[in-house]
Structure formats: structure tokens, C-alpha cells
Length: 222
Image 1 (tube, rainbow, N blue to C red):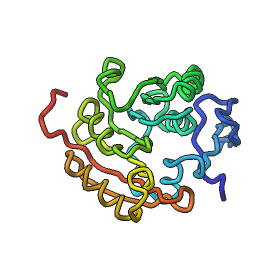
Image 2 (cartoon, rainbow, N blue to C red; image 1 turned 90 degrees about the horizontal axis):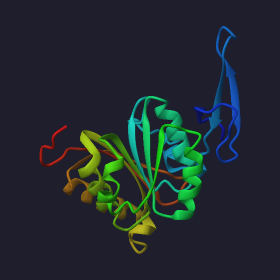
Image 3 (cartoon, rainbow, N blue to C red; image 1 turned 60 degrees about the vertical axis):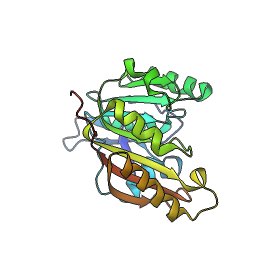
Image 4 (cartoon, one colour; image 1 turned 45 degrees about the horizontal axis):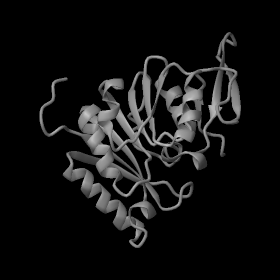
């Protein structure tokens, strides 16, 4: 079923982008819990979860750096996932999308919207502490470098990277599998240890998600 993936709504009573909301009662019928339906066709991360990702490092209390936040539809679900103890630093370059992202985050205290270029992490380093996870959906040919550059600033040793790769964005002439392999190779060279790769078909054509562990080459002070 298309509405089988949901997140527990951090702001009950409100949809973010017109998504359906479902209410479930606790066993003792005392408490009503509201969930928001998460459509995998609209979200790479949602597609990865429905597609059976082995380990999901984004959990309650996680600190997440989200690169390529767009107007924040997926970010809002990540906000639900990490809950009030967690935080999502959401970076988006487009001012138009950034405006939607900023408005949405006014209702969700655990989102820090950053309208900046993910290629220039030094521009927003004063806004971000160390994070547990970086999720990237930047759709740029040099995405692997952008991610590891941000990781060198913000990702703790042993932290996790989730990167959504759109094959045609990196090289529209090569077979998608070859593109994914080359990107994984790039991540390896920059100090990442790939753990898992999964296709995002049938939700997103010629997309894959790669999960990797990051180990900083130089010991940084925690």
C-alpha cells in the first residue's frame, strides 16, 4: 500500500505539504497518536526505507545534516524521526525553496534552516555542531566531494553518510551501475567505508542510495 510508510507527527493537527494524516489510539484508548503519510515517490529517503534499507542511522535524538533540503518535504519527516531531542540542519541553496523551508521550520523547533551553498561549508560552520549523520540529495556531478567536504567539518568519527545518487546528474552517458560504482569509489578515497547500496527503483528512476561510515583521516578533537 502506498500509505504504508508514516512518521509520528511532531506537530499534531498540521500537514506540511498536503500529505494525509492518520490517527491511531494507544492500547488503553487514552492517547491519540497522529502520523503523517510519507510517499516514497516524493522522497529518496522514503523510497530507501520502503525499499528495505538494512540500517537506518537516523533515529530519535539524532543530529542530522541534510544537504539539498529543497522546500523541506523530506526534511519534515526527518524532523519527525529525530523528535524533540534531535536536530536537523537543513541546507538549501535556492532562495525560493529556502523560503518554504524556513517557513516550515517555524513550526518545528528541531529544524535549523540554512540557505547556503553546500559547496561552502565554512560559510555556515558557526551554525552547526558535530552531527551523527549526513544525508545528501544534492543532485550535482561533484556530490561525493561536497558530502565528504561537509563531513570533514561536521561529521563525528564513525558517523554515517547517506547519499542519494542520480546517475544522469553525474554522467548521463554511462550506465547507472557504472556511475554508482565510481561514486562509491570516490567516497572510499575520501575516507568513507561503504556499507550498503540500494536502488530506489521503482520510485525514482536511475537513482541509488549509498550508506557509508565516515572515519576522519586526521584525529579531530571531539
